[in-house]
Amino acid sequence: MTIRVRFAPSPTGYLHIGGARTALFNWLFARNKKGVFVLRIEDTDEARSTEESTAQILRSMEWLGMNWDEGPFLQSDHKAKHQQYAAQLVRQGRAYQCYCSPEELETRRKEMMAKKLPPKYNGQCRALSAEQKKKFEQEGRQPVIRFRMPDSGVTKINDLVKGPIQFDNSLLDDFVILKSSGVPVYNFAVVCDDHDMAITHVIRGDDHISNTPRQIMLYQAFGWELPEFAHIPMILGPDGARLSKRHGAAALDEYIQQGYLPEAIMNYLVLLGWATEDSQQIFSVSEMIEKFSLERCAKNAAIFDPEKLKWLNGEYIRHKLLPENLVRLGKKFLVEKKLIDENTDLEYINQVISLERERIKTIGELPELVDFFFMEKVELADDKAQKTLAKPNVKEILAKVAAGLSSAQDFSVAGLEQTVRQLCETNNYKTGEVFHPVRVAVSGRTTGPGLFDMLSVLGRERVLARIKQTVERL
RNA sequence: GGCGCCAUCGUCUAAUUGGUUAGGACGCUGCCCUCUCAAGGCAGAGCUUACGGGUUCGAGUCCCGUUGGCGCCA
Image 1 (cartoon, rainbow, N blue to C red):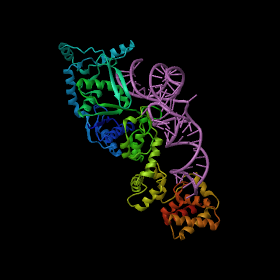
Image 2: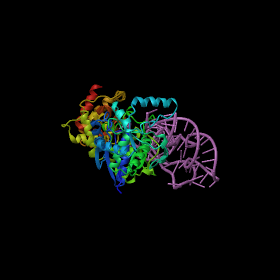
Image 3: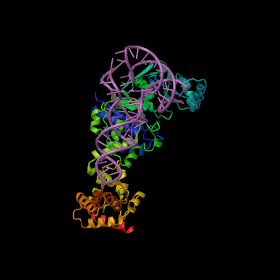
Image 4: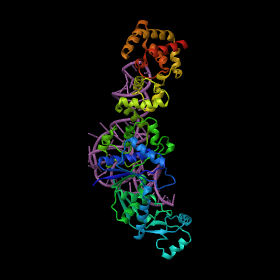
């Protein structure tokens, strides 16, 4: 039998780190089992659902490379079907119209609470006669449809991640499946859709565990075959609370904008709640697919660690990203910051970006590190730079270096290094005494790529101009 | 309030399914390399496995309780 799974986000915001991880586990499971991955947008909450969110979620999924085989389906398109299913349950006597008003329910709930009883629905509309219903409707009451829960027995789940879980049926009340507006309630819509889409494995966050017994009751009432359930743990913020906006970047989009790579994010996400026996850290997508299994999923919630994600992203930039792709991505950020435009020499851009490969952890860090390559005047970045130039003999040293470089015929990295080192020796300068001021003179800062790499890329003209500029200011 | 899930270094996790000194990764500290910053290499600190009982020759692993965190239902 073909395995079928689905990812079913609500379009009430951006795709979340947590949502992305749920999607990933579903996707990996489907790909690993050569199954089908269905995408369904759960937009029954009309008030909060937006089309922008849907578009945003789809874009994020595509960006991560999680392709779906069917969909995206909109749950709202199945409303009529859901209503038919609800009517079917009413006909079968498994559901009934309830005319209790929200106010009445609230009053009763408070009474129950006051008596320290669990505030469940009292089942008072379970057996209304036709006349009673008619009377209510004449009063202008619109019924909801409630599912008739059994009064006893236990519902068992054999969760693929958590193991066996039991719920006492008597604790659950007759829950609403169709609101008076005719809109299906989440627990009902999910079951209908999962059945209609022939979902075999429901893989979702463990915040849905408590919903599962209700859903199972529905499957059984319809006589439908149960899917397997796998509840994966939540992702929490650094403070241990459920990950949300207030934890800073919880939306995938923000990571895209900061210059994270999809492969790195996928890799980080798979490590959150899943591991191989050898604790392997770096996984290519195909490796994840090959090795993924629900049995090896963790049961406990995981705290999202932006630092480790950053490290992984650096790894991917250094070791996995093709040089031409680094340049391509880097260019976008440089254009955005207006450091380059279509007139900027391409080869120069390539060389500049390549110089920072080992130093950046996100592509977004690039512009501020290389801005001086594209600016006419060198600005001193900080006090340290100032101090370096304030040291004795700097003026004289820079003048000598300028002279040496203007006549140097070899402007390659190795050639430059030889020239400058020789200059140090002839004049009896310590290398540091020379290297540091030169660095500051051409870049305005005390840190950066190797000095000779920098000089070589900048080229003779820029180097000499900048040294001259600096000397004049001293 | 009821019900449910969970509990190994600060964080993510591993542990041959009950059998050595609890392993790896991020982060942190130090050293090496070195023109700086990174990268890389090496080393170190950090977990009496939440706590308390029990079963057992033997428990991170099984059972019970407690505490705590999270979630669901309102």
